[in-house]
Amino acid sequence: MRLALDGLTLAVGDRNGNIRIIDMQTFKQIALVEAHDSEVLSVDFGQSSDMNATFLASSSRDRFVHIFDASKDYQLVATLDDHSAAITAVRFAVSSVTSNLQLISCSADKSLIFRSIYKNENGKYQFIRSNNIVEKQTFYDLVIDHTRELVNTACQDRMIRVYNTQDGKRVRTCKGSMSDDTGYL
Image 1: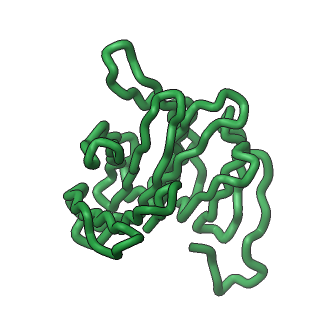
Image 2: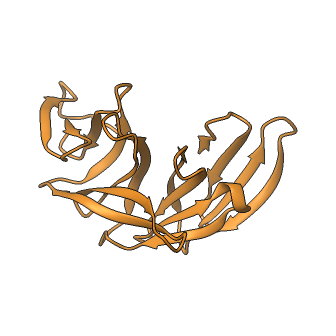
């Protein structure tokens, strides 16, 4: 689940592939988005001031990322099929250098994909892959740091790997767990 940036709506994914949109003032469901064919694993809101748009992205076990326009009744904008296994997390990030909106996803296929978002001359949104990182372990989750320059990932081998949002290069790695019997989610 994820709160919208304004705090007024909450997106909640379910096991059936649906996303429920909840009004946080009334706690009533205001929309039901039939997004995926299997469990929704991650949702995130992203806002682009230069494109005047608010997006909702979702990822699922069905290997798809769907992007919806939250300002247009959650109309489907794009479907991305770059991953070959369950997509464990999807996040938006605003570049600290270019101020462009990025979409970053990680998957059980051991890949971390960075996409830049543009609006073409026809008014259609394009999600252009800028970096594709493949590691030797599954990525469980990711979070963008407060500087918007780094992506922190939790991995199957209990390591935390940190990548630069601009070029996708790994910046550092640290052991996430001191014990072999625990891991990060």
